[in-house]
Amino acid sequence: MGLFDWDPRYDIGVEQMNREHKTLLGLMARLQAECEAKASKVTVIATLDELCRYTVKHFRGEEMFMESINYADRKNHGVIHKNLLDKLDAHRKAFVAGPASALSIDFFHFLKLWLSSHILGIDMRYGATVRKTA
Image 1 (tube, rainbow, N blue to C red):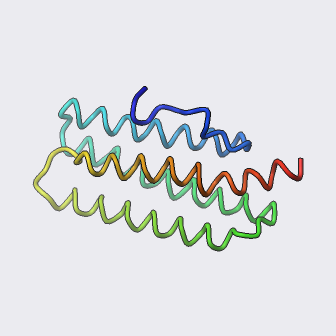
Image 2: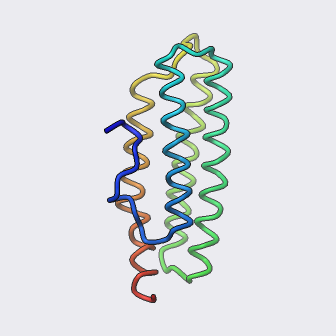
């Protein structure tokens, strides 16, 4: 199993969010593959930028979804999203400004920890709210 493969444990019970999480995993895997293949820094930055844009889009959609179901903890969830976006942006800026042509293994561990802990620990909570009302 690869670092960014879909794990059935990530299924939060909301199909749209599952699809978006799979897209995030796919972008992360593509980024890792580009770095392993020693793709140009321009290529890696383009994929990193795509990941950043999609993450913003996903978080915005997720927050709108939580609003639509009147999820009680949506404001805290939004704060967590902002913190994750700030960290992702800091990683991006450091990579763009630095001499390295590939992202570090620490960056990929950050992505994996972010995605798995966020889905399994945070997103599952609003998924449980959906399942209770279904």
